[in-house]
Every structure is written in C-alpha cells, then in structure tokens.
Length: 254
Image (tube, rainbow, N blue to C red):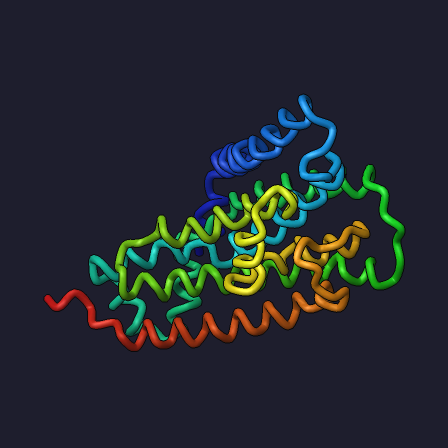
C-alpha cells in the first residue's frame, strides 16, 4: 500500500530518493576531507576505509529499508494507536515495520553500493574462495544484526514510550561508528561493540580477514566467519525482548 502511495507521485519519489542518496553521501565526503590531509587513518588507507564504509552502509541500508519504521513505535505506545494494530489479523511486528514504508531509503543502499564498488576496484585483496564467500555473508548477516538492534530498541520503547533517539544512538550511531577503522577507537569501546552489542561482526571482524589485517583484540581467525551465528543469536534475543515488551503493553489507560 505504501509503495503504491509512493509511486503515485514519481517525481517526489525520485527527489526524495536522491535527497537520501545525497544526505548519506555527506558522511563519505567527510572521510574524503580527512584523507585530503592524511594518507592513512588508524593505519588504514582510503580504499580500505571505503571498504568498511560500503559494507556498513549497505548492511544498514537493507535493515533500514526492511524494518526502519520501528522507531515510530514509541509514538504509538504513547498515544494508544498501537491498539489498532493489535486487533488486525497480522503480526504486530510486521505491521510496525511496514508502517509508512519508505522506498526512498533505497538511496542509502545505492550510495553505499557505489562506495563499496569503488573500494573493491581499488583496494588490494588477495582473493580466495573463503573471502569471496564472506562478502555476501557480511552484507546479509550485518543486515540481520541491525534488524535485531531495531527490534530490541522498539521493545525498549514499550517501557520508555517515546525513546526513539535512544534507539537511533545504537542504529544510526552504530553504522557511523563502523564506517571507521577499529584502530582509531579505544580498546574498551572495541570490546563493547564486540562482546556486549556485537556490531563489530557487521564488518570489522570479517573485513579484517578479507583485508588481511589482525583484529585489535587478537581474536582467532575463525571468528571472521561467525557473523551468521551472531546475527541468528541477536535476532532470537531481540524476538524474546519484543514478545516481552508486547505482553507488557497496557494501552494508555483511558
């Protein structure tokens, strides 16, 4: 329904998609400005940082396209309009995810894909079968991890009500963090996004293997192939949090 509504005004769709493309592109422009003054950033060259950026942006873009409307849940909890979703014969999670579905978010995916294409064309990688296999796994697993963060953040809003900015700190903030090399951050932060909120499995760990670089925490090589397992575990935990939050919902009390 929302796609048909969007395509009814195609010029508006094209302009909003281009706007999304341009707005997200400013992040990479900031990286280019940095490299106009330095040759390496945390030991990483521009093509290597572009590789991290492209992986993070595409993975997050896929999750944002599929389930990015979850940050609207807080408003529905606050004003009681979530009640209308509860009486419909469809999963509430699917309804919230599809609420005001924004096809314009394709602009983020397109922009990230262009940067990733540039990186793959310029970075020096000794390709092998495991590394080729790891490329699609990184994107799909990364999207799954970000989806889990979206759902967990939405579950938190059942208790906090309108706390979308807290959720955005881990979703949009997380993808911005992953666009830079792990070597520019303190080890405490790297440990936190590896063992607590495992965003490092989106690109830092598998990309380190593809680029032939050691991971700052000295983890074994096989952990580069664990993102699918981490994504499955994150989705399972987020699903449990969602069910607990939905069961605790008591409407507005009016």
